Length: 325
Image (cartoon, rainbow, N blue to C red):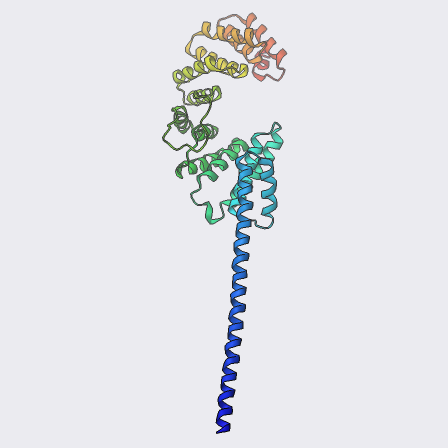
């Protein structure tokens, strides 16, 4: 009887110890899990705050600080899409703010490196912003990269990313690879008035009219297509609207060449003389005047103009060749 009671008491004690032990373990596990949850939430909040602060720097135009911070963060998170895109975007903004072309290309290379790396992540699929900036970066890298500029700008359009300057950059990039038909098609879109309901992603331009450089680029594409009448219309518009003397001079030289081909020697001469009267000495204008006078049967005046061209620009090959004949 005593032995059975002893066994019963022993069993109760063992059961009680097991219960207490299990309770202690459960409490420990609960505390541990709670600590992990709190730590994880705090870590995510800190990470979220850091990213929000970095995004605020970018949105407020502090591109140099954004570039530096994202560069530092990428050392520990090299494939983080958020950091890679902000690093690339801020590098692009730094590039276009440079005066020295060497510095510009250095930032452009950083932009391309970062955004191409971002393309390797899953988050890159269909992100038109990335394609847009990458396309413009390749355009600024030079004509040798124009095909890549076209590729990524078209990807941006394919992803329905809306930015007003995409058609203009596409037109310029297509012209650089001598695809003038697609170039003028893109330029035609660039000339369309902005659609207020299109959800354009970049801020509206302060000037609703096309730039003089855009008009000049369109004219060059039409000249390459041998559509001189259309090119002439854009060149005239460029001369009438531009305030840049170099742009106006270039447009007038192109107009003079068109008029010469059309047989309007008097109109071409007037344009070349206007260039010289308004813009000062210009080797190409003197050379072209010499060509007009030679065609009119006046070799003396022609050679005088070619000599002036060489005096202004000793490396002017066509004028030198004419004088050596």
